[in-house]
Amino acid sequence: MDAVRAVAEPRRRQILRLVWDVELSAGEIAERFDVTFGAVSQHLKVLRDSGLVTLRQEGKRRYYRADREAMGPLADYLQSMWASRLDTLTELAEAAEAAEVAERNERSGGTAQ
Image 1 (cartoon, rainbow, N blue to C red):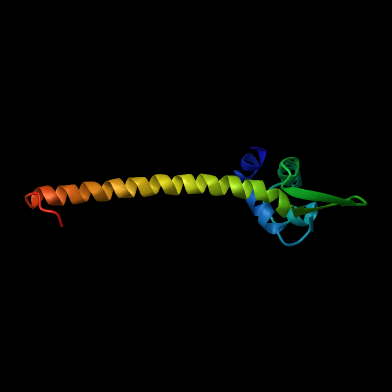
Image 2 (image 1 turned 120 degrees about the horizontal axis):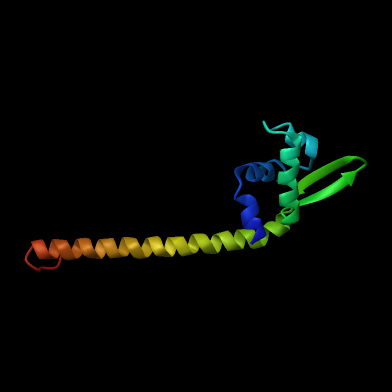
């Protein structure tokens, strides 16, 4: 999934936070980072190509904003991954608890507690 790869890079996540509620020009975005304008421009291209930001051009200026609708499938995908991880964590916790109960029962002579 291109969107997942796009948000894997920390600077791109920062850019998405910046343009979540407000439209900013490429220059305004670049001012907030300690890298070259070209580097920020490349990050914006990746975000745009993955569909996570929209671009509006006004004269020579390019304005970017997070595309919240495009984030829907990404959020669903990440939620499913998170749910899967929680299911695994639950299974591990339940297995550890069962082993602990069995060990206590063994130490106490097999009586249930």
